[in-house]
Amino acid sequence: MKVKILLTALIITAGQVVHAVEVTDNSAPLAAVTQESTVAQTTDSEPRTSIVNTMKEQANTLIDRTVSLLANPFVSEKDVDCMARNIFHEAANEPEEGKVAVGVVTINRALDPNYPNTICEVVKQKTAVTRTQTYTTSEEVKGGLFERTKTVTAKHTKNVQRAVCQFSWVCQSVKKPKTEDERWQEAQRIAQELADGGYEEYRAKYQDALYYHAVYVNPRWKLKRLTRTGNHIFYGPIQPKQVASN
Figure (spheres, rainbow, N blue to C red):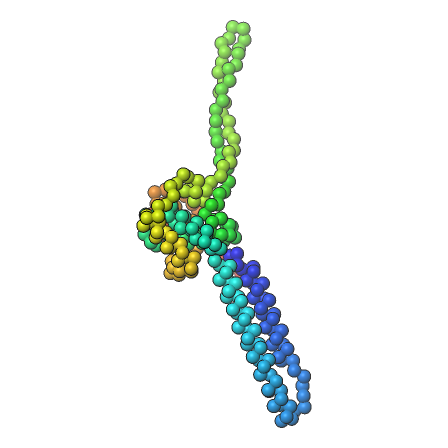
């Protein structure tokens, strides 16, 4: 996930700060063992202990806030709108879970290092696809003095590159959703709830989903099939096998 590197650095930094305070707290100079010095040292250690605890709480709070911020690809209201449009065009006639699942896939991609960082960037992403195209040419070849002209045909191949939208509706001429359309209203509601961190149950269920397709097509993906919801089948990446260590 994209948060790992920054989070790791944050934890290390916070840990170093707390450790430094603890070392300071435990490094008080030895004093003569008298009743007076013992009382003084005990009294003096109480504020330092309080500081250590406060810094630990602040470090944990900072980590929690950073994780929450980095794990939320909704950076503006525009991202909520992009999510709503994607849900509407991809799953308008699906049950609520099917709509949410499409939304979770969009979120998962925004959090995956192999995809763009925000919801709108993920929805509008295009990838270059190269395909081999075969075509035929013909040429009139004149023969000798007493021979007829011959038509010579030849087959050729060439690589053609074109941009493909990750979500097909983006590359199509689609109508703008009507305000009074209940499906559009539901898509907006779901998008906002996802932006607010809702649907925890479905987020957990589809946490590994990065791909899906309609049930009436068979792209023959070499991916891990997760589940079918409505008219969509959801997939996750195939995890590499771990080599057992001796």
